[in-house]
Image (tube, rainbow, N blue to C red):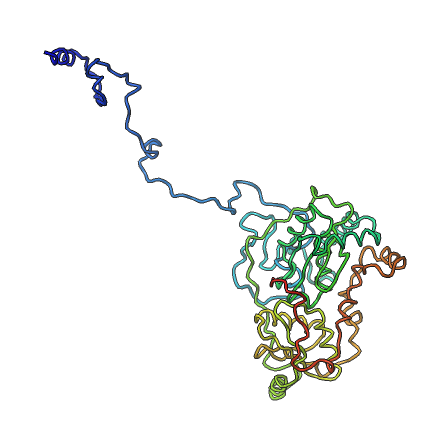
Length: 435
């Protein structure tokens, strides 16, 4: 008798959409839920979009995607290179190892990439046949950069200010340091220097490896590319001052390189025959060079500023010089050989058995030992030479100015007769990790 009312309610219930009976209360009280509470089947995103195709593949975010932004523009008035100390605009390659892919990324910089650099001025404006191939626009950029550097540096530092900044940048006072290794002063390192200048007036730079063979070039490129001033140098440790009127909010735009470009192809360093000699004489010199006493042994990631004076002194008594480079990467001691060829100067004989063998040549002149006479183009004036001279006259015991860079190198000059055959002379200055 109890089931009869239930059956009657089911018979008189209005027809509606099929529903799910989740509870016995629905049957007992005859509750019909509205259509808004009825669960509907879920639709896939592809069906909701109106197309029955496949879901598009996932595309991760990329730093190469500019999002419709225009290419970056930089007002820096010099050509962008991967390394400013280890590359020279005067050395012309004979080919490229890869197509001219810009290391700044596609459409990220408004300068074209030539395979070697991103020039500040269009290379088509140069007149090779003219006496001065630099266009007027490039000369104007150089003059603008010189005036801007003078404005930012302002008045020269007093001896007390210089001593305060030098003491503030020592290892026991701060851990801020930029390491300059075998690649030399790279383009992205300029951004690191300006980032350090945001919070401190000077930054410490530690130089080790191949670039230290020519420390004068390292100091020149640091001052030229950053606009700062080197106020202290002790071996491979430099302190770079930003200037009195430096404004971090108005720092130059420095686009970053996303990868290291492939090095171009240069002519062979070691010829089949040395110029001016026959094949037999060349073989005899190479065989003799492997048996001459070792001038010095180079340590990996060492400080090599005294290498050029040592080779010059050795050429006063010997015509061949051998430098032991065991343990160094092949690219490192080949770059060292190129620097010796240009700075001593000398003739490269061989790189066999991890040895650098150089010959002084037939027409060697011992009077070319003064670096200022041999390479006048490498010495450049500082904008504060006159002011720096007055500072020296006031206090001779103060730190030396940025233009007096040969004093540290000349202190490491030693005669080849005083150096034992297998005694290592050039080694690491401290136990700091390799760069």
